[in-house]
Length: 524
Image (tube, helix red, strand yellow):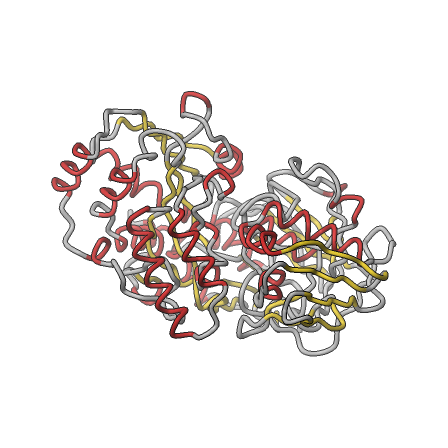
């Protein structure tokens, strides 16, 4: 029986968890793509941790609908002394969840901690001489060289966000994740109701003071209309869709593609594209260990990749749901270009790739491919790659696991025999691929980079030049050079773009674009 036909006849009859008999108008029940495995938003490049972060923490700047950084926790901000000093002034009435006021020293400590962890933050840190706090509401960021994108850096929504937390936490050991999520955002994390693999709970923070103005993405007035947000972890996507139809959950963030036609016809359910830039799937190599510490081997892999195979596996045949021909910048954004794209769009020839792999010097080293099974889209990507890697003749071990385990294992820099890995795959928001500052995987700073740890001095130099460049024509030319260098050094391989559709109860209004945003949304 075809899967789609089976779902069409049986979806409504599927048993669903005992979440609630009827919807509570003051509670929003949300189904994320995966469980929350880490509470510290400056510790891992994981979207569930980032989404948790924006519930619990606030940021000094937010991004509006046009991805422009706007003051958020700040009353005002601006450069002085020919751009060598940035003066930031906190708004009044800001409090942490423990009742303590938010002070400039908290913000300064939070920035310092974030700069040690995040790629964009590390770039900013190279220009920062010191951060001083002349009074409880004022920060002065002293620079050795102008950094005009400072607001953009502090407003970034790509993991890892610059979350503002109490100095007592931010000044702790930077080599250990923070396990006490105390922020000043619109919701408090309720640790006592956490059930790993099942539920995450947040309660409205009554002392949160939204700034004036309409909400746009992570900027503007963050008004919390629900008293309580519950994340329900339902890894079976058909079960999640059935729960949505019955009103037992309110919002399924990313329904499986073959369920969307059913949900679009379901009474009381609405669907929409919430992220026009979608998500971009990626194949990442461990470049510290054989065999993928060999750039010639990484380059050989381009000829084997057919992006449409991956996109059809994840999204089905409907071309409205995906794009191939995707390079290192998000399609239909200013820096997207065709430089070097023949490596991905030219004729595919597996025999030629097999020869190139042999000529690269591959000597049969173990290739451990991490293949999480509990997220439908990641599992679909893994099935395509496992088949392909086997055909290419690698000494392959496909390690099946859950997503949370893969997140922990990918931090291991060792050989597969030492608990390490060779390849993993994940997807990033297309908005995080708009420029070389936000694209975490495009860094080439070795052991300070995200897992995979590529080294590319040329990409780093071009990225730093881009950060100092204002005219758009010059930025576009640098983006072409960066993309050409990426095809040479291969920090990762793009696998295509999914146009993400979300599904929710039709009585919800005010849902904002960009990421799962829990303010502004209400039940009518």
